[in-house]
Amino acid sequence: MKIAFLLIAGLGVSLVLWSGPAICAGEAAANESVFEKADTNKDGKVTPAELAARRIVWFKELDTGKEGKVTPDKFRVGVFEQMDRNKDGVIERQEFIEFFAGRGHEHLKTAPSVLPAHEKGIPTHADLDRNKNGYADSKDYAEHYNGNFETADTNKDGKLDVKEFEIWRMKLYKEIDKNGRGYIVVEDMVVPVPVNDKAAENVKK
Image 1 (cartoon, rainbow, N blue to C red):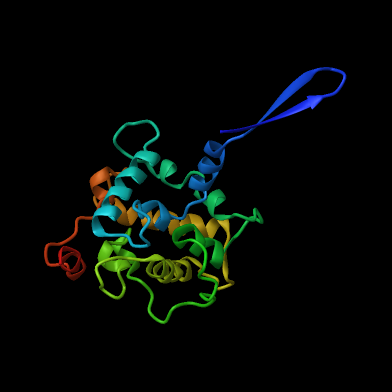
Image 2: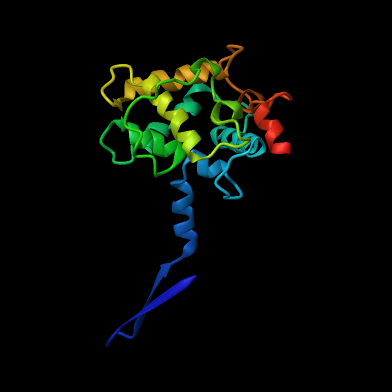
C-alpha cells in the first residue's frame, strides 16, 4: 500500500495520505458488469459452471438477512440506482447494457430483430450462448440484454423510468418464483444445464 507523507514546515507535523489499491480494487469490483463478475477466471468467456456459481453468489448477496430466501423487496432494492450511472433519474439503453455486459457495445442503439424469450425468467446458459459455441462472451450478454431492454421500454422512448423498470424487474421476479410462494430460494436462481444442452456438450469436448 502506497503511503505519501506531507511535511508541514514549521509545525513538524506529518500527515499521512493513504492511497491504497484495496480501495481502488473495491471500487472496480463494485463497477464490474454482471458478465465480468461471472467470468471468474477472466478469460472473456462464461461457462455453464461459472454462470451457476455466479448465480449462487448473487443469491447470497440478495439474501441480506441470511434467511435462505429472497422476497420481492430485497430483489429490487438498489438496482435502479446502480444502473442509473449518470444519476439523471432514468436508465438509458447503454447504461442497461453496460450493467450486464460491460463497455464496448455502443453500436447497440436499436432493438434486436429477435427478442429473447422473456418468459423463461433469468436466462439459462443456452439462452446467453447465442452462437452455441459452449460459452457466453460479453457480446452475447450485450445482445441478450439489449432485447430485455426493448421488452422493458414499453413506451419506446429509449430509456426506462422508475415505473417501467419496476414492472420489468418484478415480472422477472415472478417468472423466477414459478411456484408463487412470494419468495425465491437459491434453487430457483441456479438454472441446471440440461444433459442434452449443446452448449454443455461443447464445453466437455
